[in-house]
Image (cartoon, rainbow, N blue to C red; front, side, top):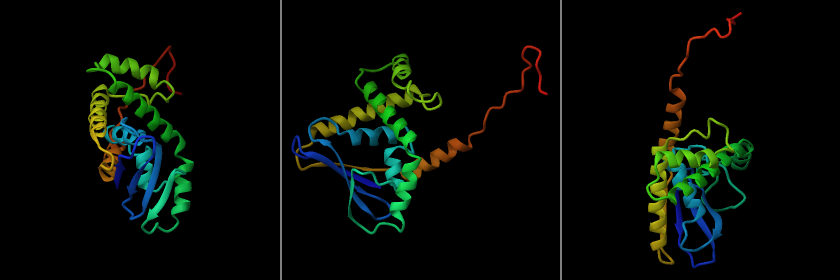
Length: 200
């Protein structure tokens, strides 16, 4: 999936052109244009760098059509509307996780050379709304994502009106990584008898 973000005149409503792998092309509307990195690019970079396959951009790649999206061209797959509704029904928690993680990495990107302790301290407060499993972060991965965000923010700030940034969503790579994580062997610890109680 290819996503293109044009640099529009300041204060105009922004959009991204989304060319999905199934051939359908959509326009995804965002906030107001300006020199600050658009929120949707921030999401894209963080979800890509943290290998989040089921966030906002993974959802769009798999068939979700949000209310802020208009169909531009290309034939939509059969039952596309029904598939989008089904995916949206289970998307809420994953979307919240992606939003919280993106905002967290944006905060880390605002720090100069953040240490592991700084990242973990920030995570303890910023990610406290998530379930414990979703709030578990690797400081090195977060630091790398924050650095990638800084790079894209600098690229965006240098754009002139009429220029654009384009990105490829690595759907296949993320799906493979997600499957690999799912296949990772679990550590099974032997049962320990506590306070004299054993298995019945």
